[in-house]
Length: 127
Image (cartoon, rainbow, N blue to C red; front, side):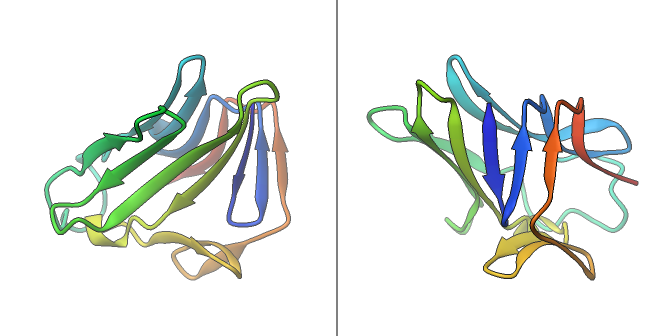
């Protein structure tokens, strides 16, 4: 599986983002799915309730919507044969300062872009 996130490529990484070793964001391709888990022990307080998961009719996209209907995570299956996935994140509405844009993947005041992480159990581990 190849996931593109904020100009970074994550290849064959079961967990894309973790906090203190606990999975926060992960994608599967067989069947295609996006999972989001907000740990209880994050620094600061959680801003909102857990988001709702919405799937497209053809199950090629999964979106997590915050209670205000703001997309905090979007995964699009670009190719089932090559298992390529495009992922967008903006966890700020949930009280987590992580988002991606044209500049890269923002984690706090750090920006990650142009990285390739391959065959790692956890691509990005925080805390």
